[in-house]
Image (tube, rainbow, N blue to C red; front, side, top):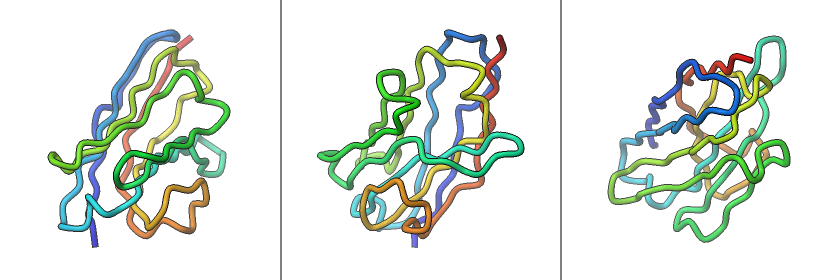
Amino acid sequence: QVQLLESGGGLVQAGGSLRLSCAASGRTFSRSAMGWFRQAPGKEREFVAAISWAGGMIIYADSVKGRFTISRDNAKNTMYLQMNGLKPADTAVYYCAAGDRPTSIESEYNAWGQGTQVTVSS
């Protein structure tokens, strides 16, 4: 089982950028698909982006396409989410997750981090 820890969240003005990191421990990271999800106050957790174990398959939610970029470095056991053009609507707790395949379906991920807060001011 892989253990996950997010970092890089913070407060940023609209139009700004942040880079989230998800550090993984455990030997299965390089064979795991990874995803980012987020949960805004009073809302259900939603899919943001996912990447296959080798990075060959990437999917994004329509709401972030063209602004966010997911990537991973298996040598460093770390996944990233580069967020540009941030909007107040992007304010949420961001979670990374590990699973068997890159998918937007939350239930298909079997390991989760504790989350990192991203706040975008207008």
